[in-house]
Length: 269
Image 1 (cartoon, rainbow, N blue to C red):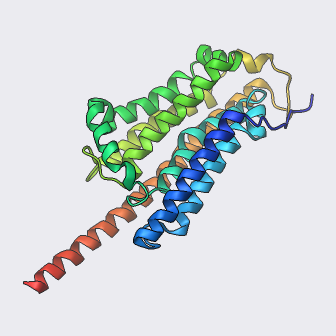
Image 2: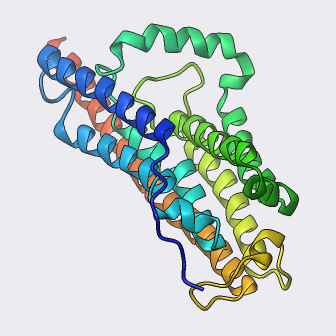
Image 3: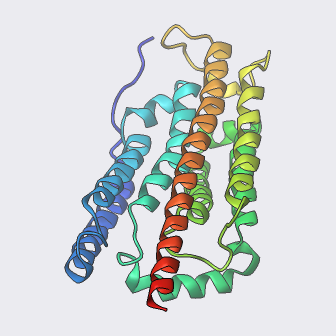
């Protein structure tokens, strides 16, 4: 049987992506007018467009249709939502772009209490990935559209919270410092990577939905499952490596700026 490569064109997704792009573009232009190109460089806009493209790729393109047919593509969809889109959209923000809502974000963080702590974000990330890959929950999401939407929303929220604490342009009350980012990354990515390894090397088919589906691409249900688990484990390792390199580079830049300020202060004295 041939695979279905059709586009879904979900109107809710298209409207949400379009609305975000319009609001962001206005703020990006406003930030450049107020503080110059350094406050809103072109590459920030490019990352935002790429992030929105990742959402469309996951939820509107043939990836969405193929996710119902092939576990490997459903896994790719999950990783696009929880990591790729979240990273790109947050990196597209700057403090100046966020200026109209900065105070509200600070109030929201205080009101959230423990829910605004990085520990909660890390637990939510691991819980979302683990809970929805329990066979009963996975099959439920594929059999019932409402559960499928809830699954995607939970991935988007968990990913947004998780990456916000690492990449946010606005320092929060619970900012990760020192070795905090390394522990934060390693603890979550290793756990989710381990889940991917368990799926990769499972001797049995875990998800009845895919076992009952017609075979496409010449993959058996077990081969499809093993490939999906390997994709999860590999993606977690690659993303962790890139993120740690970026965090290390950012730490060096911040240290250099601190030294420069201290040197200027010393000269003035």
